Image (cartoon, rainbow, N blue to C red; front, side):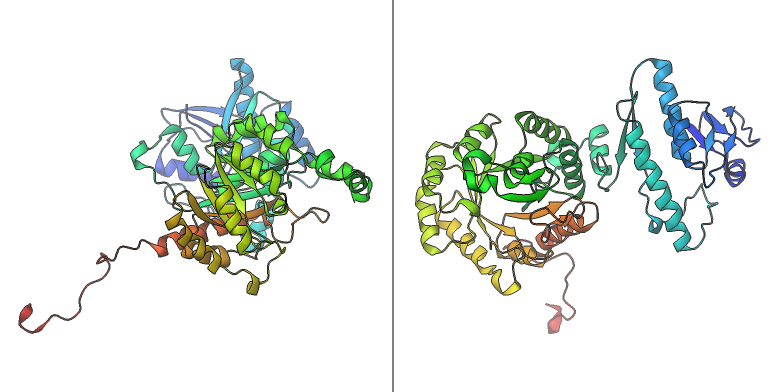
Length: 455
């Protein structure tokens, strides 16, 4: 059933001019369409002190039309769920909370917004109310899924279309370059924060997300764990590191979430207990980071045991390590040899993207090898060059807002902004511009001059 809620007289005028399109109109005006039902409810204006009352009315109290109309829409969905006696899924489409997106239109007549500064103020206020509503509706009869490209979005418009009108398998294009959103431990061991990061990474266009797993009590010495360290989780480094670890239930949640939203995940496994732990999830890939490049006994054991692909970063290593890796990991199904510089951030003169081209040439001799790049440099430029040099996977650190005590914040892209989305877009643009190695006549080109005689 199509339902429209409004209280503005300009909407009533527009609907009288264009005719009704919904089956039910919930309004405070005298609008009376032919062939449609009308429910008249009062309009309550939003005043300086009435924001809290509006949020109270969302959960209880009579149905009214709020100035912030989506609150009334959510209230209506809540009432429907209670009448039906079962939960309701609500997709919010078009609520991007962007003043730059333009004005609303109804078949010609449009809402004439004020100046841009005032518009930003009003829309920013509505976004705050929306986030408050999401919080208040947790565990209620209404499951609200924001559709968009924001950090709080549950799915993208493309994912919504795919869910209700999926393309046939033959129409889906596999990207040439896999983009990895490297979460590291920036979830801080908080499952809700992890979910927000995973969903935001998916909305931005990532193909994979990556987390870390280590056993702090065996990876670090007793002295290191007992050392003073200031964080919200305690006063020692051990307090900090233990809080950052995801539990078995957290990994089960991550696995289920990624399956549900069509995203892949893998983890850096920094020690033998972590490797054994991760095996239960039958991962397609595991990562062995630069941090443990000197732990050759452990690396060798993984190479002998694993039956999945390995992503191996080469920060802080040289040619001798490369030769050892090629020999040691010769039998793994895929070896993503990931060029990296372990400075955070990496100075431009130390990026040395030419190493990726070297790995691409090695791949001709070692068919299981896939060239890759882990970006610890600023922005997207180095990663785009890596794509041109032959990288088939690029990895970028991500975070959720600025946290002054967190590791690697200097190089991570903030998922609460458009930075990571822009990064992914630049990678896709680099793929597009790179094209293929086959020289052909493109549809866009033609000869301006012809030889004499028209030949």
